[in-house]
Image 1 (cartoon, helix red, strand yellow):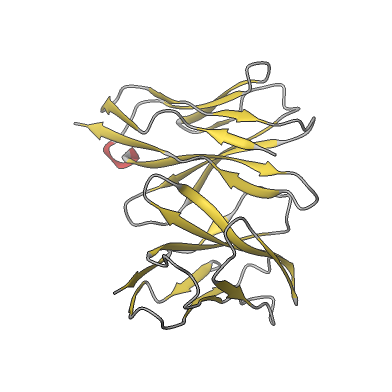
Image 2 (cartoon, each protein chain N blue to C red):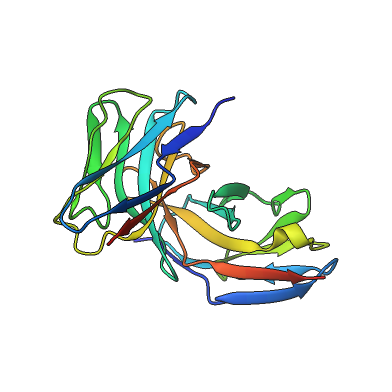
Length: 113
Length: 115
């Protein structure tokens, strides 16, 4: 079945460590996104990519990095520079930017101890 | 910049009754889209319904309908005949202009359906 796979679902890390969250899609979508969700905050955009080898910062990109070397994959690295990384992270894709229907993964919950 | 406001942090409804979840938006665009997503406790976001700004009729998808009032800039979600499985967070979203039209979300409304 087509869809988006995020891994891991739960992740615990010590403060100061970089962690990478995986996001893979087999929907043949050009656009991919990373959102962060905190209680009461809704979804905030971290990075997005419109096409392979291209990505743009969202509203809260500081302390995060991404790559888009393959159409199917858009991994997110939470670096030690991110001051408050504990959150729920959602990856999404759409056929292209400008089409609002997003397809989401199940999310990754990161807890920094 | 586009902005979405959901003023109801939490709503309660009796099973089988209808409920309206509010959403207002702020945009200077002539053409735009509005969306609603559902997020159950499992965390995955599920697309529910879409309304284009030039659509003359309110969008409907099964038990979901969108009460679109363009002059008031509101796009309320109406769920008819609520079911226990409707208990979830609900997010209103629009496309943010500025070149790339990226989806931007409100803070969400928590809906609890009582038996």
